Image (cartoon, rainbow, N blue to C red; front, side, top):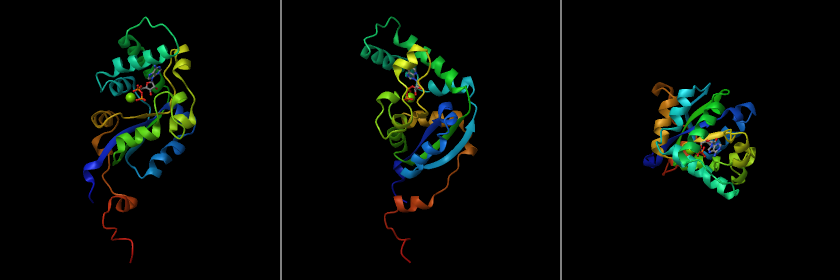
Length: 201
Ligand code: ADP
Ligand code: MG
């Protein structure tokens, strides 16, 4: 096996809306189709502390999320009186409410460039402007504007880690080390094998 240095892990969470809308199979299928591997997968009812920890593994997340929300409001021509931090805190509280409302599926995904590949399949934060072909773009139409009116978290079905370091920390929050399995799949032999030795008999 060459190409080992490209192999990384990322965390996917199928949020309560994905479970409630019976979209677990449909979403999981996309990662399998691409050739990525699940090294841990389970149904969990998230605790408040875990959700808070998860979204603050990046200490800048609150400010950055607030800034992203401010930009979305500016685009709608809405005046903003709160700071980015205040908006970010409010988003975090709404996310805690959303993520603890029902079971979620947590998945540790492994493969070459798994972090950016999973983000690509998932799409951007706001489903309304997420690309066609992405999970968020294809299965949900929520928007910043609709979420804002009810002061709730955007329902976008799925979480995906944004970078390798966050992924490592997030995986630790949701999985015990012994729940993550090291194994190979039949297709990996074809994807990563340079010699293609084991096909013809
Ligand atoms: P992503 O999930 O695309 O990485 P973020 O890390 O910025 O996005 O935010 C985490 C989650 O918080 C989003 O997936 C979404 O559910 C929710 N969220 C983010 N920004 C807002 C907002 N302005 N209003 C409501 N919910 C938001
Ligand atoms: Mg994020």
